[in-house]
Length: 157
Picture 1: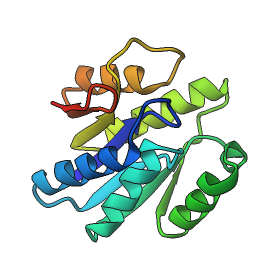
Picture 2: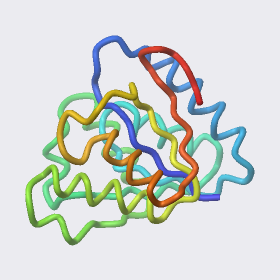
Picture 3: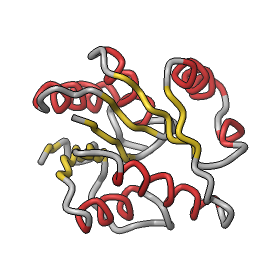
Picture 4: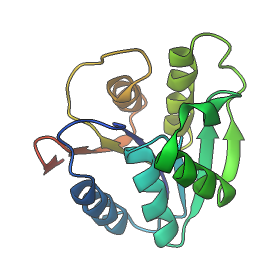
């Protein structure tokens, strides 16, 4: 089973330890996870990637832009570089528009190549193109199973 992730980055009010425990629970509940797909963004994506590797599954890093590494500073950059060194790489070629277009395309790639999507999402409407809400909507249009971990309300559905 291939599992992809979409989720929030550095957001006020999120207990990332709680999120990590819920991602672990979801991965455990999904039978035979063989691979996880993630853009390795700060926050949900990096935590998901670490949980996938802990389970012994393969990690595929979906890279939305040529200069993606420039998005990262400090500890998230160090984590990104470590995780990408452990992952197979899927480079998104189409992201020639805005960064938001590239992120939307990367999210759609993850949905298109996954059986299940784990969304770490507050369930609020989109605040910009290519964010978690857009990717969840696309996943539902594509009839993918979406497991939502709401890090603000602390619910899982």
